[in-house]
Length: 317
Ligand SMILES: Cc1cc2nc3c(=O)[nH]c(=O)nc-3n(C[C@H](O)[C@H](O)[C@H](O)COP(=O)(O)O)c2cc1C
Image (cartoon, rainbow, N blue to C red; front, side, top):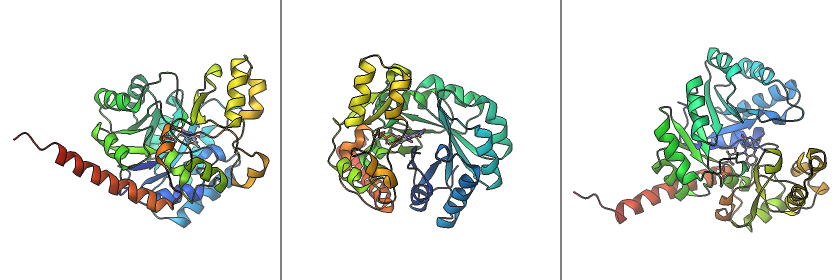
């Protein structure tokens, strides 16, 4: 459907999924997903799409964000530019599938995947005409929704509930996870947290190093009190947010801490990197590597995993 070599989607990431990251995932044989919400000016957005095309001829996708945001731009403006620039795959994510935009996406001949966290949302996306649905379990980095269903249970439930292809993820940090997600019935996997450790991801090296030393115990859920639960790295900023929430703080008090993650160029402004979405799979990522190596390792390990399973469990006849 997407004309990609490996069944691996490089999860979109606010602040980080820019041209270099997106092109690196696609060029390595996966599908990179640019975060359109990084761009407030349409000229800059258009320039970014062109930069990706300069870096790779392989297909890539663009995410349209339908989570409530303070300075939400009309997603139709992004779509105008995407149609002009020949983008072939659009991913939408948010609390509800964007019913009002489906006709435009379809008329433009784009493939549409919608990312969500539960069976009923997946069914809704299918009923609206989604070509594929992405579901991520509760261990994932970023938005977790409110249902708290783990990857192991969510993927097969969704696979059994819809007839379109399912992309599954949440907690996939190596090839064992890739093989597992495919074994659960998904057609492809989505990976975010593991790719925080790619050389092409524009995180400051000091934060990347800290991530290599982090384990599955080092994430926490924040922002549930304002209906926008996110799994993030359990750093000082996250602890401050959690404390404010426990004390009943409203959005006005939380905002200064949650409004921006500190990426490479701004690292000096916050020693811990600010609020950084991060999944439990961080315990599986030990090394910072080029994107191509990460993706090839995922595939090679998945093959080793299936070989191991076949050996452990010969066919009964
Ligand atoms: C730093 C970071 C930022 C993210 N930002 C977004 C975002 O803006 N929109 C979105 O739909 N998903 C976002 N995600 C979620 C990923 O696209 C992907 O669904 C998720 O990371 C997969 O689970 P995993 O982290 O366990 O691999 C983000 C994830 C991370 C780690």
